[in-house]
Length: 329
Image (cartoon, rainbow, N blue to C red; front, side):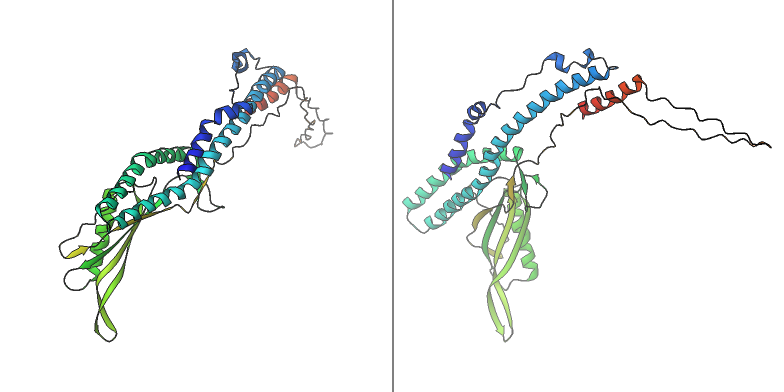
């Protein structure tokens, strides 16, 4: 995990220099004259289209450079960062297991496990959480390849396992409901931001009463929940029940999201194919229908007046509408 994380950090730090070498690091500068539409004759289609053409060309260049910068950054943050999540989970689970195994050893083994966890939580995991926070701002996620991209959330699924025994008598359905509620409440208290908290209970041991009938006195309890960032390896979740029950040793583990971390959806590129205002507007001449008059003796229909083609003023208005629409979309 450390090697993969440091590789991403090093490449991200070197990204500005690489973009400069590729010629896309510099910002596109806009002169005031290129953005001041007040200097343009809005009644002259050629003048308006000339202004729009220069401005849109600069915007197109800025768009291209920005796309390349974002693509390079998201390649590191989203694609390689997404692959890092599994390594984070593996390291976390490894330390948690070491802690459980150390409980069976001597004091020196326990101290080594505690020291490793403290170092991991206080150093490596802090940096990883900061990195995950950046991923949430810059990336998206998809449940499947065909799913619509959505905001990054629930990157880690935590799991709590415990065996709970009823001290007297056998577990009833009411007892199981109390245990489930206590387990859910314990997770919610420890991780207020947790979502999708679910508890399942499976009978662990059964006492035979007579053929075809038995009752359970203990149960295996498994609670799962989703969180946006990895939990500390030292975390403990305390399930609180009445004195009627005994809660055995708890075990916490994690798994990365099954969704895929993806880059943002592509944006429709700017269309810089603008008219220059020189194309004449064409309008087919219309013919008026003969007017009918209710007279005793019908007259010959008057000749239809010819409708003149669009004037120069109409042509200017048409060109201005196109340029203005393209400019402000």
